[in-house]
Amino acid sequence: MEDCLGRTASLEELHHEVESLFLREFGCKPDSVVYAPGRVNIIGEHTDYNDGRQRRHHPLNARLAQGHLLFLCPILNRNDATGLNASRTGANYVKGVLVNYKRLCGAFNSAIVSTVPLGGGLSSSAALEVATYTLLEQLFPIDHPVTPVEKALACQEAEHVYANVPCGIMDQFVSVMATENHLLCIDCESMRVTQVPFQNPHVVVLITNSNVRHNLGSSEYPVRRQQCEAASKAMGKRSLRLCTLEDLEAAGIEDETIKRRAHHVISENARVQQAIESLKTTDYYRLGALMNESHASLREDFAVSCPEIDLLVDIAQRQPGVYGSRITGGGFGGCTVTLVKRSHVDDLMKAIYDGYASPERRPNFYVCNASGGQRLESHKGRSCIHTV
Image 1 (cartoon, one colour):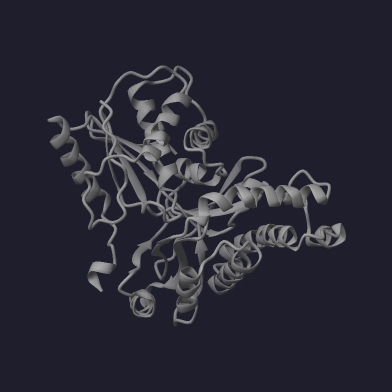
Image 2 (cartoon, rainbow, N blue to C red; image 1 turned 90 degrees about the vertical axis):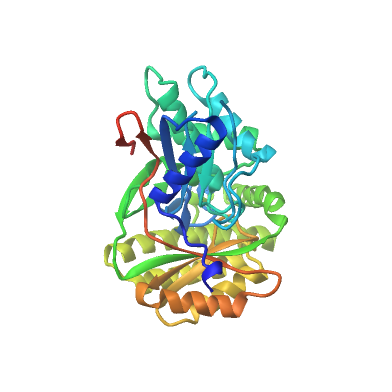
């Protein structure tokens, strides 16, 4: 069991690792270290590009050290080597941020260490983008600093244009604006964010990485966007955010696939609102039930799950101490998110491992709490600067 748990390194351990990597590559310690988190979605999946509301939890940290253009992409887990050459796609995320930055940049050295799994639906790309932008702010200050929203949108644009991924805004928003011990509720129409307290020593979030990724993800994501746009158009609305289930029934949409896609988004928006109320009253049983409903909707209506993820969710939902479990991220593999009593998390991981592991696949686990967003640590003054 121990080598499957993928224990997430502490910030201090990662700090030491990235300093050692930078020293090995460049012969000196970095002047600055930048932190930016990935994210896991508690509820509100595939609603952001429909002007929906999303709640995000943000436990995983990617780090970018200052420096002349060495890109080491984030690793899958801590048992892998860290000195990996950047993939073309990974380098494109950084290039996009450099182009979208508000002033001309000079040369710099950098090294990257990360606990955000690649391809796991936990937003390693947004973490890299936001970390890069935050580093540039330190190296090449702008006369009139951008707002957090402008910063997140610049990073989103980098992903759209240079990585050719038509992502929504929630990943970058969380990485920029997250606050420790809070969930971030994002109104994707108005760009407003609300911090909702989430701090209970007896409740934790367990991320389970299935370590499978089906190729459908990259091709089906734009298809889902087109289907959602077709549904809102059929109802005469600007986006599904403005639609109700009654509107959907009255529209008489003949294409059952488009109808199901819209049904997920509309019902998911309603679940987010109910989740907010559940958190305010610390009703974790209700929140867990909403997570279970969300997974069923993503499996049946939005069709972005897969057998491996469904197995992980089914095992988790049947275990004592579990409030709820669902797929998280874009889908077709990746990770699940489970809300569980802290006293039961070890038994839960064992049950999932025993029920899922095979010679071809093993899960990795990350026990998380809500962390803060991007921040910069300057070695010159050894001061920790929180930028959110």
